Amino acid sequence: PSDPRNLVAADFGELELGARIEGPVGPEVEASIISDGRSIGDIVSYVACPAEYDECDPEDLPEGTVYTYVHTIRPGVDDPNDPPFQRPVGLDEVTAATVFETVRQASGFNGSIGYDREQVAKALGPDGVIRVQDDNGTLAWRVVGGDGWQTGEPITFFWQSTLPPEGPAEAYALRADEKIAMASGPFPPAEDDDS
Image (tube, rainbow, N blue to C red):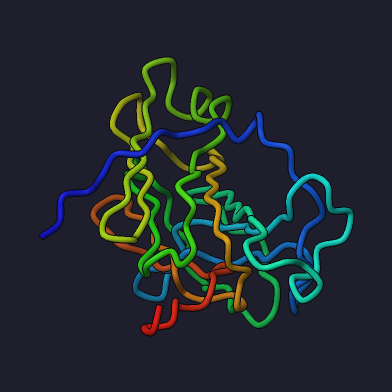
């Protein structure tokens, strides 16, 4: 097994972002975080262009444009989803969510990654720490300090890629209370094997 590299986390609050990509379900995608047919949370995602763009259509943009993938996770809460995402009937409260991660390699990842520090301080308390790691191309945000990430506490995570999203994919997971729950959100296509 590879040793995850620790990355330096930037503060989402300091990012300046441009327009958002209008996907098939609009500029934001809302989905449930699902484990064994039950929801353990809510994920709202969007992808933004650099600050200088007031329209964000990847087809019009130069290769190498940096796209910011943003995901706000709320454990133990599940608002109505955007179609086509089904909303499970059952909803479990969360005592301790520990990791948000991509379950696929983050294609085009440019090394820029982080979270909203203010939200983390609110959710986890003053001792709250999130460690950000690159494990062989998959990205993980790991709660390593604080009083626990629990029901109803939103935390926004972000990472950047030079590839625009291919569309929503079940490419994310949340680990909480011994469960691994899957979440859908915008994700770039896999990189070609030729490269």
